[in-house]
Image 1 (cartoon, rainbow, N blue to C red):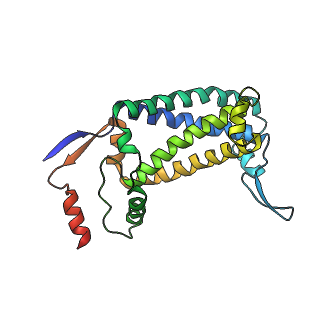
Image 2 (cartoon, helix red, strand yellow):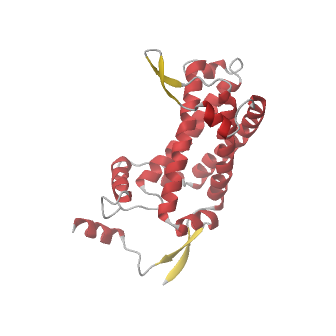
Length: 232
């Protein structure tokens, strides 16, 4: 017998889908700004071994000589990013959904088992509720990253007015390095997230849009049965 079950609340879906284009715009406008002071690279004995973005990259994606445009977009959508983050964290706290998101003591061990299952090395995934252990860690990490981006971004935006934030981050140069590293983290998260959604299939994706999923009770194994299958 099939039944429709609510999986994601409207508030969670709103924050998720609003945050996606905001982050895309933030990363794009951040690249326009970064072009003006492209200093991060790996050097060895005075020789540049690796540069994050070669000149051809900037020209291909038309990122050159657009610093004012980048700053205008970046510092405008920064506030939408912060407000959306505040609303999301506030909702999870008030609704109690933080219990489904925060990692548990066993989450780090189980996350490894989830990875082995995703790589088809392990037959059964560990038992889960709404989110598995890897998702708990990833979604909590992205919230912490968002807070870090907001703090470092404001510190870079107004280093004189928010000098205490600059000091807290270890100085202006380190603040900029942290902000850059967090941006790379978002890109990495995007890639992994999209791959995971693709592997999970259309049913999982549609539930993130509609908020509901169709469950077949007859084919849904219980947690105890999953444990028994794993032991055998």
